[in-house]
Length: 182
Image (cartoon, rainbow, N blue to C red; front, side):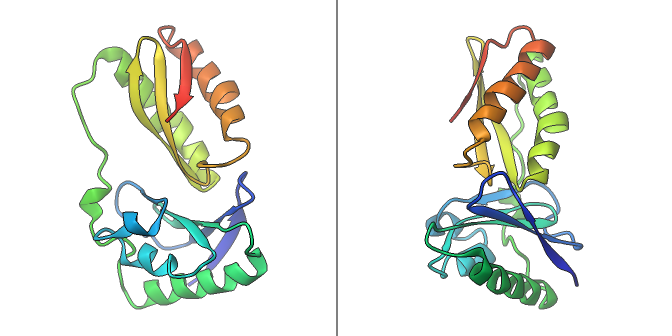
C-alpha cells in the first residue's frame, strides 16, 4: 500500500493520500477529540497524539492539522504508519458511515443551483487541497458555507471564499449577493 503526502494551502495541515478508498460516501470532519465519539475510532486514536489538532477524512485521504509547536518531520512518519496499519488490519476509518451522508431537503430552485455548483465545481477543487466546503444556508442573498479540513483556519481560505467562490456564485446565480463562512 502506498501513502503519500501533499501540502495544502494551510501550512498547519497536510493531506495523507492513499490508493485505497477509505469511505464510501461523504466526508468526516473532526475539529476535536470529542467530535470523534461513536463515529471514528481512527480519528479518536490520532487525537491521542498531542500534535494533532484536527482530522478530516475524505474518500481516499486523511487530512491532519497539527499544533503550532509540532514539526512535520516528526508528525508525518507517525500518521503514515498509523494509517497504513489501520487500513492493513481492515479496520474502517469511520465506524458510522451513515453519519457522513449528506442531508437532503426539498430546497427551492435557487438553492438547488447553488448546491449543484458547490458540489460539482467547488468541493472537488477544495478536496484537492485536503479540505471540504459545505452548503449551510441561503438567506436574503447571502450564501453561508462551512469550511472543513485544511480550509478551516487556512490563511488563504477567506480570499478563496470571497474572490473565487463568491465571484463564481454571483456570476452563475444572480440572486447571490455575498458568501460568508460559518
